[in-house]
Length: 195
Ligand code: SF4
Image (cartoon, rainbow, N blue to C red; front, side):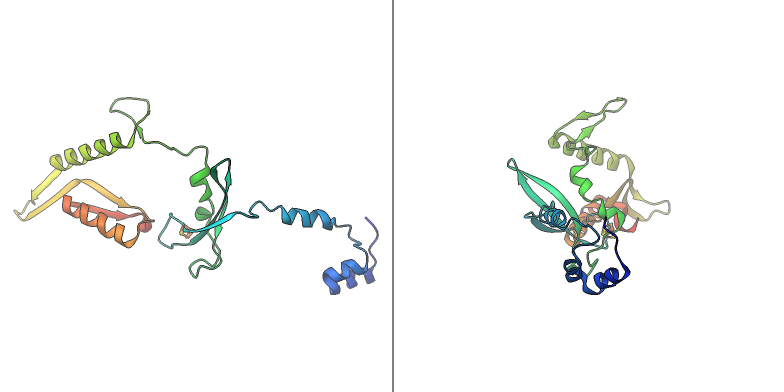
């Protein structure tokens, strides 16, 4: 790298990019390579889709950058949305890992079932697991339903089931879930955003 005199250094600082041109790029930066790299940014030309972080009730806004590769949508990057008044482009470490929800090699893509007493998990379809959940809810409710408390008060509650709502619930989904659970007599209701 060529020697940089004090005068050249001051000139460079004061003049910025113009200064670089004036003193002939004395720091030896490869400006062509830098420009090419900028042009080839991995989100260049990507589709921007706005979304919300699913992890907690803060509701930080995200931008997902995607492109089509061989007819499939590939996620290139997920980052905070600078236009959001909630997070102004920032994400906490959990939200910053949101891309892993879609791209992690450890992501489970099918319902998995382990039969009572079994040591191995089996891939099942959604019909099977939804039926299984309904059967288990009914069995737990039948086995633990309390019609009257110890003082004889009518309580009609289900003490053997607890329900935790997801932080990505909309208000309507939260309302609906609460109605369904209260209808079953469930009293142990929580919400992920409060945990
Ligand atoms: S988990 Fe983090 S990024 Fe996601 S909504 Fe909550 S605070 Fe925001």
